[in-house]
Length: 559
Image (cartoon, rainbow, N blue to C red; front, side, top):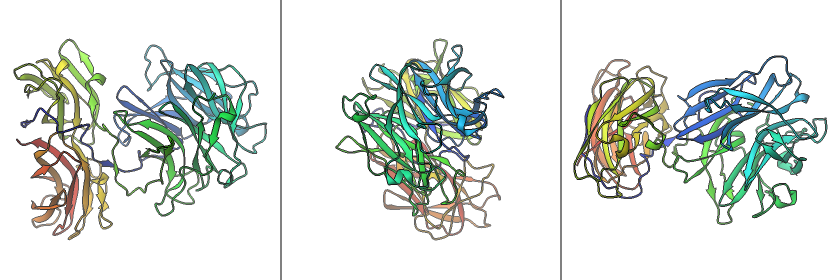
């Protein structure tokens, strides 16, 4: 265990250590994703084998190591026992709900149903109680339903047939009296009448509706074209300011899709999206599924994410779907676990749950705190069942945040970090793990993801000799500009000592020496770097021979 010195004043608006990530959001197929962010966690549900409903729980939009739980198995021999599609997880009027489509094995009998989190637990991870079918008076074929809260009113939006034949799917809306009861006639908002919506049909498609709000504007994104084709794309309905959601004339449909396949990027059939905000609420993100093969059809559909840009006209821009090789800046506030989302035990213990570690290792940690007294606060910090060690929180100025870097042993899987004594409950405002995974960095074409290893955190990156910019760690942020120490985990499987060059913010840095080690052994190499208040870029390259890079840890702030 070690502790560094610190500064008590940030050079600017600091909101997390930054870094990048890459699509996809999980390694398994996650078609028709639905995302909910609540109390410090993202929850994702999706079409899971068509037989049950699974929910994933993660501190960030990276669900690779998320907690996973099947929250609903339908009873057998009912009208909703088979073909469970596109569950939507929502927090409506103070309760958690999941809406899903199902049938009895015959697609013509697909209808919408609702689950409500049981009152005793009130947990998005279940258990759930079955609330029955959600239907209007026509009781026609229906899928992809979800609730819409607008003003003081509640509505249901879904994809359905006009009659009893599979000719086309339309977008419908109806009023609700509660989250599982439609209370009025359905209204047709959109039908697939544009050429792009008809691609791959018949049948022609409007489905996968999702709700987006911004600055008092209301939008419904939807997917058009055949979901079994690479032409599946995302369109948009925009409600006129002050318009009535039940008045079809108040909605405007974009003529062209806002996201569609990009063959050069290797992304096909982007669609059936959902929306989420960054952890700090300052950014809007679109999460959608897509495939990597033009002929994948309904196979290999995995959730992906990218940030939404907003135009001066108040309309969203989703942009072209990003290639799997593209390193994407993480959402603002990513990885910052707020104390308001921690548990308080007794009067002086703060417990941060749900902290995942891919392997048992000493991890770097940054503590955010406020100490307006005139003396040091000394708190105990521990994890993984180890005895707590002492951490000193020096005084800060009024309304300023202090930062202390430390290290903590975490075990493989989910951990909780405990802080106690010395006013920890009132002083500590947030924690974060300042680790950057190499596989999420921007890689040169010559670099490649190595095979999984029991000793690596996630997956490592194989660097070929003499590649100038083999691994580029972008968007590295620190609360205070100055001197820092980074720690790299590197593997040298040759018999000789190797070197690799480190460059910081475009300036050529030092040559790092990497000793020879065992076949599956990573060694730690430290380097002193100077980092600025703006996002920093650290580049590794010009290795003398093959090396593997696992992670970059921001270990401590030298002052």
